[in-house]
Length: 456
Image (tube, rainbow, N blue to C red; front, top):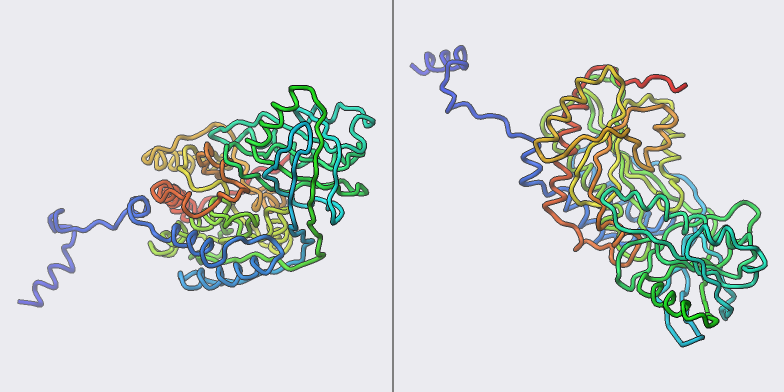
């Protein structure tokens, strides 16, 4: 009798009642309801490593932690690719207005800032409401003074204001230095009203001597603007003692989900491992590493995909995209198919953008339908990728998919002392993972050609 039952079950599975058939779990729903990997990685990086400034011992510890964690999670070919990079570190930071009234300021140096003498400097402040005003000012008006430059950045869902107003930080110090300013400080490139100044990199043109460059908190900036509006002269004492410590080691941590078909070019998905030193870098970008890794693990656990998925936890993004550039150089001989990145916090994904070949239109249509199920709409704008995948995208003209996160509160936290683990919303983070699972499940099993048309 047992042999008869076994034979019946083996030959007539399709005849079993539907109530007895157990469907495979939906990986997207699994991510939405129960993923813990993304949060665990974010917690681990921020708790056991903490701030991870590029080129420092802390970033080196982060690589050790990341390699061990990716290995523990079951990824293949986990390795570190190191590179050398120039390294700047913070020193003492103090500032106060001495006239027309005494005001102590919450201030932080910008990356690559020059240093004041050990005793600091004191000088007259000249105010500019925008970078354009500074650029238009005659050199004689700026020379020898401490420039204060403001801006009008506001919160946006897509973070689009950062590209324009961020020039105050990225280019403002170089402009001021060329005009002979003794120093420059800016209204923080951010949107929060805590007395937390935002750091971030600035750059000086070749041959231009770096001047002391810093950001003050937004409440402090607005307070100074009110004082300036009265029309009385303003003076400032400033002490910044950062150092450039020369070439130091950074590195990328790489891991893979090995695909079935080695002839299909792999997908590369990225985050960045480093952070600024003022906080533990939860939103920027431990969360991104958690999101992409959790999604790749869910896809891996569902069965080997057709294409290899390569994870890139890039080093030294904050200070010049050194990791992304190094990855493109060292891995440029291998053809890739598509690139994606998570580097905008952990709040919900609200739209998807594509840059795919016309031949992949069915893939695009399938992804639009699947993402719509979790409330994500498709944009007509082209995907561009992120900073760390930018160099390999440019080198190989890769297909790209962007999962755009809600950035409304991102610049309240980014590059500030407030970028800590408690700011992560676990529900929104799981929605990110689900979106990534939906995309990776389809793209990693897509066997069609993803080669983009050659650029003119």
